[in-house]
Length: 197
Ligand code: GRF
Image (cartoon, rainbow, N blue to C red; front, side, top):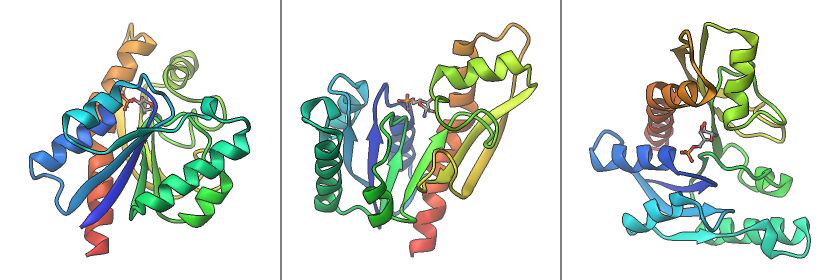
């Protein structure tokens, strides 16, 4: 059994895709043991609670310094002790200490075909705005291991999505979620679960 902790900041549709894949039996030998958000209002926390999954909020805003937050975040992860940490729309910079302690055991979903439109400043809608501005005909999503950089770790899986005439960033984001993110994130977790067997 692969025990995963999912880190979220927003609506949690990628978390929901993992939950649904487990419930449908498509994703085997995976258990979500905790959901962590930096945002107390993240609907992702509701999604976790609806499934009876342990959910907690650890917000940088609740700490005097970023160092204090980083320590609390690492302590929580050590206490949860997951086999894999999944960043699903998590908008917090992962502390170097966490990347070190959990080296090779953190993955992230990014809404573009890395190395395009990634790195510092490329998150959420900004990614799709940049893709539309550049005029690419194909975009997509990437699941990759997290290393000390931003969106720089080894790529696990990618899926291409067509950009259509008249797309707005919102329309494109939704298509990338539906046709790529919600498919390759559970599939990538499944690959890792199989390797663990
Ligand atoms: C998604 O677009 C994901 O690619 C990006 O942040 C968004 C998270 O959405 N990292 P959700 O919270 O999973 O709905």
